[in-house]
Amino acid sequence: MKRFLLPLLAALAFPTAVNAGGYDCEYRWTKSQSEPHVFTVRKEGNQYISYGKYLKSTFEHNESKDFLVLYKSYSAEDQAHVDVRIINKNTLAFVFSTTYILADGIHNGNGSTGFGRCKKIT
Image (cartoon, rainbow, N blue to C red; front, side, top):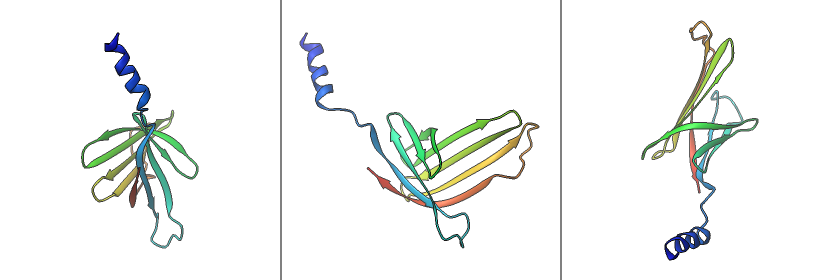
């Protein structure tokens, strides 16, 4: 009985963190743009969720000591949309890339790439 009771009491005494940190990031589409685009990436449980001004989205991820790579794909009948965000955990620089692929497999050129900075949040 002690073998089961002690781990149970420890689990109740030390609740797991739901939000285990994340990043606040910002970028500008052009240098002349007055207001930056801002998004937040939060780790919730085993998932990363990105919050923007108009969008909340859950991303698949790969994480190493130095980089956090977030990716998500969307599919429709006539095109696919791939969104990738890479955060350098050491310098807090990031790059994102969005691309659209038409049903015939050809990239239609409407994708975008941006660069920015993040700050770590706990």
